[in-house]
Image 1 (tube, helix red, strand yellow):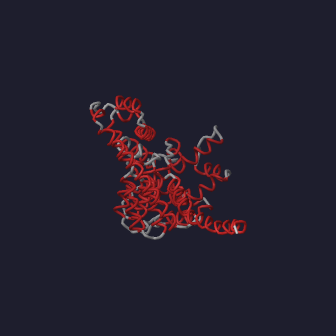
Image 2 (cartoon, rainbow, N blue to C red):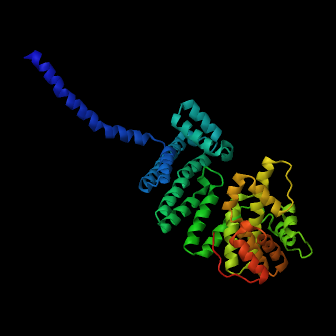
Amino acid sequence: MRIGSAPENRLFRAPCLLMVLFLSIPLFSARAQAARPYWFVMEQGKNYFRSGEYGKALLAFEEARNQRRNQYARMEQDMISLLSISEVRHLGDNLDFIERYIADKHVVSAARLLEEVYYRVGRESLNNSAYKALGVLKQLGDYPEAEYWIGETYRAEGELGIALRQYRKAYGQKAALAESGFETEILYRIADIHRIRQEYNEMEARLLEVLGEDTLWGQSGDSFIRAAMTRTLEDPGEKNRISRFLTLYRYSNQKVLRAHELLGYYYYASSRYVHAEEHLMFVFLIQNSIFMDEIIRRRFDYTFTTLDDLLNEIAARPPLAAFFEETDYFKTIYYLGAALYGNGKPAPARDFWTFLARRPDAGEWRNRAETQLRSPYLERAVEMP
């Protein structure tokens, strides 16, 4: 009886073991999922987003946001508990003394959280203040990148109102951004939704906010340099205004290019030709500066002579030619001429239109320029980029 029962028992136990293993898989999976750091979940969400799996992407971005919030909330509470210890309270707000206490008492959790703070903001920025470190932990609980990508997901699904709220939330948390300058990208997203919804006053305000960080456009340089640039472009006694302008000035800040572009066309469409001229002048300058910088990188002895020669240099370099196709280059030139004409400067306007009229590759803008040269007029309808 015993000899026969052993295999029977083994046969009975095997399905039970399989059942236990099967039932434990969700538990192990849940633990593995919980162990994933928030940044890993964030990257996984981006992959879902790029493959068009927006539901999964949204869940991942929200999980990443909540994980980070909870992680830093725990750290913040640990720091509060540390600072509440009577021995630590007697040390005041002196971070040096508190670090010594942590080392002497082997408070591992406190050592780790301070290490995290130093990694994020640098110890020197705290001015030896433990309470500043506590404030940093509170701020680090924000995850503006996750809020931004949640907005991107809603935008992809056509929920512009929710997307706008998310972008604004992300911008409000810009102090916690890991990538310097990413707040500009968020502002562009906000402006773009206002443009789509034809809320042009809001669009204008956000784009001007982008330009507020531009050294050449902002308070430090707006009056003298911009006035000099405008005088050069409008100079009635100069026969080669365009060439002189591009010889004297160079500015390749690509980050503000779209802001100038959108504002230039918006101001032209609303008959504010002085402002339109200013912004389209910057678009023209930045576009050409980018091309010249790239050419110089490959040919250090390059010197700008004429716009036609520059375009020949661009055409000979496929990567530049591809970027050229994306810039609406001829459209910029056409409307810069139109803005100059609307601003009472017909001579420089004709220079730009004449350039387009002799360029077969300008297509539609060549035809429009030829019409303007025969009988100049102010166009009212402008297609926003």
